[in-house]
Length: 94
Image 1: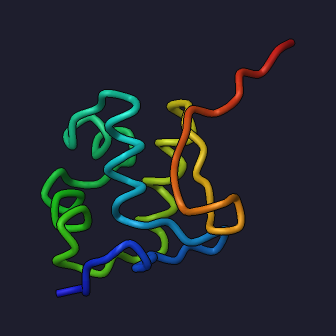
Image 2: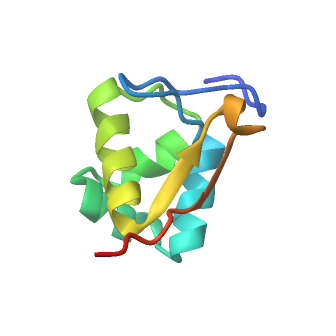
């Protein structure tokens, strides 16, 4: 089991994200675990285990989750952005 706490991060090749950020991003988008799992092409059981910190996910799995959430319209904030978090991404104008 992974240790819990706000400083625990899951690393990808782009930037670390936390399980709390995954849950928060999913909440912002009002997606169920099943919806995110489908969009990330992983099983809902795997996503549940990741969110509950019972497994250490592979980098490719985290990248798929991150990509799905960012495609859905959220942006991840690292500790240098004044604390780890997640927010809606800025709207892009043509």
